[in-house]
Length: 64
Image 1 (cartoon, rainbow, N blue to C red):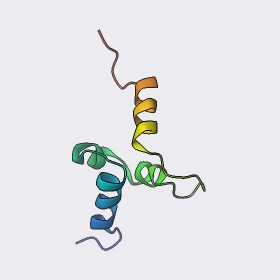
Image 2 (image 1 turned 120 degrees about the horizontal axis):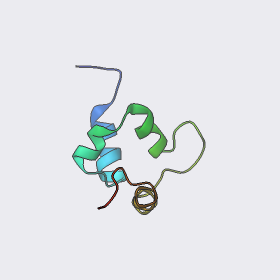
Image 3 (image 1 turned 135 degrees about the vertical axis):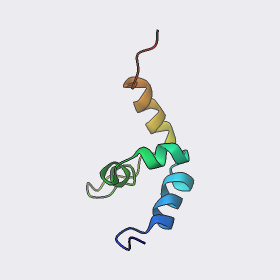
Image 4 (image 1 turned 90 degrees about the vertical axis):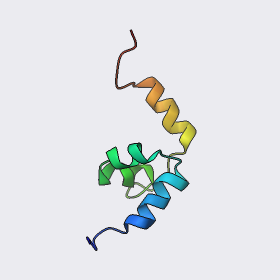
């Protein structure tokens, strides 16, 4: 097991704390997860509403 990451703690923060679905959590890079948790830049973690607003402004796919 990789001891560099606290996977149970990170999973709890991402899925319980941020409300991410498991597939969304596992699609994140470690840097993206750290950003969402407010690490490194002194800002508060992004909440689910802010994430949804950001995703609506910058969708991955164009609607047809």
